Length: 183
Image 1 (tube, helix red, strand yellow):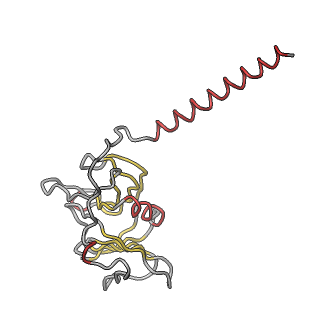
Image 2 (image 1 turned 30 degrees about the horizontal axis):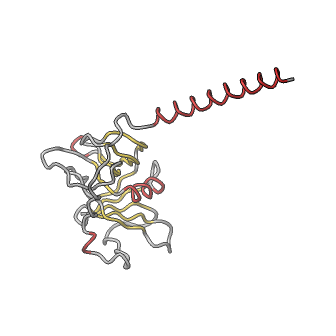
Image 3 (image 1 turned 60 degrees about the vertical axis):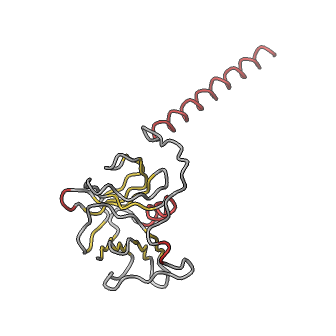
């Protein structure tokens, strides 16, 4: 009887190692190619965060449309996620890129969980909606959770936000969602 028990234990051990190996492979296949290095600095404060009282909602810009939509104000450096009627929109500050879409209505055309941005930085929760001047514009969050100003010498289209705001955008703006850009 001891002999058959050791065979079962050996079989279960081999099966467990195979499952752990497979899960490790899956995890490595979805991880960024170049994980970010630890950053000793604190994340940059969100743009225009000092100008608003976090206890008070920031009103939607005039002319930003109706219905469920994402509203992006280039000049205010802010986004609103507008849900069903009667719900308070979620609003947060963003760091615009160097290339901006013209004011108007757009739809989310593609999304990607994680990729390297056009500025060479690992980003996540990419929600693309426009391509002015042949530059793809979309919302995303830097994996290192910082919001530095973009290099003015490069043409990039990433509208960056914090990781928690990127999570909210990812959950809200699915393929076909309406995006309204205002000045």
